[in-house]
Structures are given as C-alpha cells and as structure tokens.
Image (tube, rainbow, N blue to C red):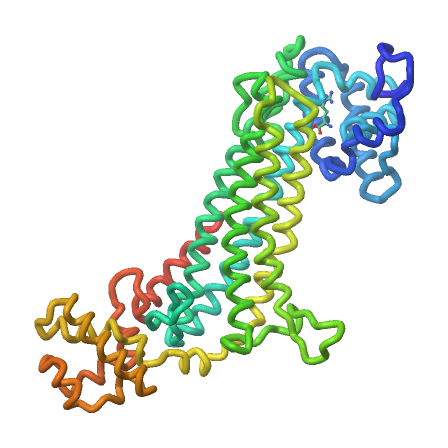
Length: 459
Ligand code: ARG
C-alpha cells in the first residue's frame, strides 16, 4: 500500500510528472524535524484517544529507528517517495506496520511541512547567529589592534578625511549587530505551531495543540488554520534578514577586493582565502571577497523568488508553496558558506598600516584647516572658500598644504597664523573627532567596549 496514492487513482503517475512533482531534493534535509514533529503528533493522538499507548510507543520506536537508519545511510528515500513526509512515513510503516499507518490521522502534509520548516529554521538561525557572533568577535579583535591606525575615509571613493582602521572595522560590527537583531525577530516568527490546522480547516480530533507546541518548543499555536498552512511570512522574515546581511557582506567583500589591489595596497590577503590564476603565475586573487560580494544578489534573488511564489496565491495551501524551500535553503546554504569565509578572511588579513598612513595626505585636513579659521572668527563658508583656494594653488604646484610659504597664506587671509600647519597633522585631526560616534581614539575605545558588551549579551 503506497502512502502516496489513494484508491482514487486507477492509473500510475507518468515518469515526467513523478520527476517534476518530487520535492525530496528540496525537503529531505527536514527529515530530523519531520521525525520530531511526528513523535509529538503521535503523543497528541494518544491523548486524543486515537492511538493506544502501545501503538504510540511502536511509532516512537519506529521513528527513532528511521532516524538512525537515515543517519547511518541505511535508509535513503526513493523515487516512490514524493517528499520527506512520505518517505519517513513509508519507512515507519515498513518497520512497525499498522501503528505506522495510523500516524497520519488528524494531520496533513500541509500543516506538517510548515511545522517542520519552522522547527528547522529556528535551528538554522541559532547556528547562523553563532556564526555572525564569531565574525563580530573577529571584527572587535582586529579593531582593538588598530584604534590608532590612520587611513583615509572615502566619500565618492575620493579621499575625504582621516579616520581609524578600528572605526572602519567597527562600522561592519554594527551592521552585523542589526543583522543579529533581525535574525532574532525572524526566529521569534518561527515560534508559532501550525500543526492541528490539517489540510486547511482544522481536524476532527481533540488533539492538544498547546501540549504539542510546548513539547516542540513553540511559543504559541497558530490562530487560523487557513493562514497556518498558507502563510510563509516567517520565511520572508528570514530571507529578508539574509538579504540585508548579504548586502553587508558584499560591501565588506568589495572593500577587501579594492584594498587588495596594487593601487590601494591596504591589505595582503591570507593564502588560505585567496585564489590563483590558471595561466598567470604571479596572480593572487581576492576570490573570497568577490564571492562575499556575489552573495548579495543571490540572497536578494532568494527573497524575490519567495515573494514571487507567495504573491497572488489563493488561500490556502497550493503546491507552489513547495518552492519556498528552494529559495529558503539556497539562502541558508549561501550564508552557511559565506559567513565563515568572511570570518577567516578577516582573521588572516594583514593590514598595511604604512600604506594607509601614506594615503593620509595633507589635503584630508582641509576641513580642519577651515575649522582653524572658524576658530579665528572667519565664517565657515568664507573659510571653506579660502582653504579651497589654497588647495588649488598647492595642486597647481604639486605640493601639500603644509608646504606653502606662510607670507602667501597670510596674504590670502591674515587669520592664518604660523601655527596653522599644526592643524594639518592627521593624528591631531583624528583626535579632534571627539564627539560621540566619532573617530577619535578615546571615543573608539568606548565604542569597542560597547561592542564587546553587545557580544557578551549574545543570545
Ligand atoms: N511536499 C510539499 C511541500 O513541500 C508538502 C505536501 C503538500 N501537500 C500536498 N498535497 N501536495 O510543501
């Protein structure tokens, strides 16, 4: 007796349809959760008087055996199994007979699959948040080494003003901090139990849904059976958090690529996270950074793909929903592969602090020079114009702002005194960025403290 076909059918399925209709490639990874949720369901069926204690025990033992067989490779699903649910149930029934054939009472694959996915995704998020915490830890560690390391901050990818490498690295820390928060919200959204919704409208047995929820670690039961089987908001929440994280990883990856170029030369890549060329023996390529960059469109596409599956679907369950797992698990796999690479890359990367300091030319302090004039009573807009004039003269002569003759500078504005050159010191400039959130070493040390505290409070 096949679990896939009822007596409704006289004919067999066409091979082409079997191939298209099988979702095993998408959902087999849910086998563990399918077994757990099935055990909870069997207990609820016993509570509802549908199963005897002996039948429930046979099911539990049988499901435990199926789990061991899957783990050892002794059981692999076959073509006759449409999906993970049918594969597990078929094997269970082979092992324990009639009791197994009673397990699907008061349950549909429609409420089963979304229960499994919610259970599974909760674990995925826990694992991935731990991975993000490890990446944040590395960022804090590397930032701690470079509170005094100066480099240009860029706007429009043009040198702008001096900042520190710590400030730069911590920018990514805070992006990831919000990613962790978003994953936390996505996890909370997983904690609603759909089981009991049946195919769409609820079931005919008095199963104790609250007890099932408690047993499986759900915080609450779904309010509405139609929504329970049709809704995938929690997957959208996860993939949207993933897509945002992807954008952050891509910006990090892209900067590594840029900084590893000979033109920038701000970093040397660890061999362990670099590629070579099949023809050019000298090449060391920033493949890891490039692939972090490429994670963003992939994750954005996963989110867009899921929203595409969901939009316009009439209530309640539709087979289209099967495709949720294609996008969900692609996103999961992408992050599982990418985040540890970002962590290893940053752990092993060497910063060329000499190149970074050398890039801090005197023009980065042009704003500080304008502020020097402001301190001497010159209105900022006028000071901005005057310093711009100095910059232009320096560029014409190929010299820095500190190399103009004092008389010439004073002719332009008597507000300049001989001490103006001190305003051009990049480290002094850094120290002046002393308001909260600024690049000054003392502020960044405080920021590091808050970042470390956030990690200490990690879930
Ligand atoms: N394999 C399906 C999925 O992944 C679950 C089965 C839904 N029910 C059905 N009658 N096709 O969503």
